[in-house]
Length: 375
Ligand code: PMP
Image 1 (cartoon, helix red, strand yellow):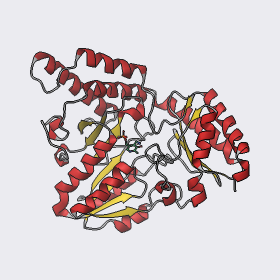
Image 2 (image 1 turned 60 degrees about the vertical axis):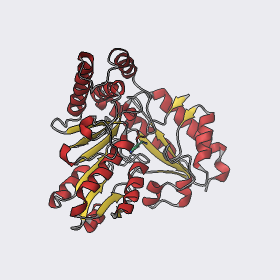
Image 3 (image 1 turned 90 degrees about the horizontal axis):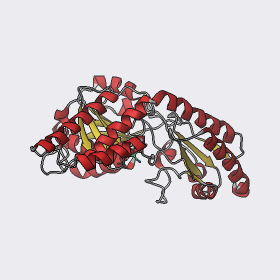
Image 4 (image 1 turned 180 degrees about the vertical axis):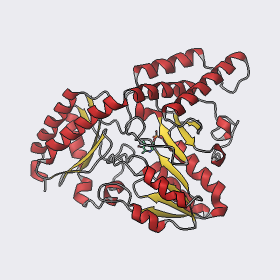
């Protein structure tokens, strides 16, 4: 099978798996224990933290290890809102955020917060004019992802940080999950950032919440006080060390991988955009490509590609089991037929030239096979 669902998760690097195994074999101690081996485990944890921050060019920031981006987004949103509630009650979010952001801000309505959504342009980027219109004195929090997980659209994070220069009260949170080691982006503007190791060939169950100033963080779950009290619970040291290892390898090869994935993306785009009734969404990040067979159901296309040995998804893995139409594509003003017929193809550094060729041939084959239903 050819794996092209890398926005859902990536295959771990061998080196990351080895690190995970070695750490669990040799440093299985609790990082909070004060006996000699516990201290060594604690040192490894701190070395991993330093490495992650340095690789992201965020030395001086605070890094809290979590179980992944869902947990990081929850801590950032719930924790910061509770801490800042006396300064205002309005929260701004883009319409195209991941459910681990949208569902959290929606939940915060019960605590008295008012949520306003920023419009999206047809190119999948947030509308900065609409952001400016909605920024007022009551706004205390803005959340915008770095790269959209459905289309790959790169969001103007630096420009937003600049706009917020005039609104010092607003906390700027960025879900950077899909951008890490994929897209070059200055990440020192936002106040907090979320990431997940398994999106850059680390392991599932490890992630980080990174903050410009640790003091703004507040726990949402209480316990023994690990991770400066922000994320209690014995630290998954093996997965954290494996994350630092994966980030190093992914960062070292970023340019070469970027060029290769961007090349595949372009080739597939060019090959399918000439086919009748095929609509290719504007993208941005090299690893994601979203396209629709107008008139067909996305599931049918995904299954037809599956029968040809290629694994892709309809919209996102998190949403693909539910019938609702994809919110990101709707926010970009796509028709219902385009949204229903959409599939997401996502590459990784493991993707090869030959696999890209096979994909193009398979897309042509599926197009012929289901041609009767296309608009
Ligand atoms: N944000 C974005 C943009 C994502 O793509 C994902 C993963 N689908 C997440 C957050 C959640 O990551 P995790 O499932 O690792 O918590």
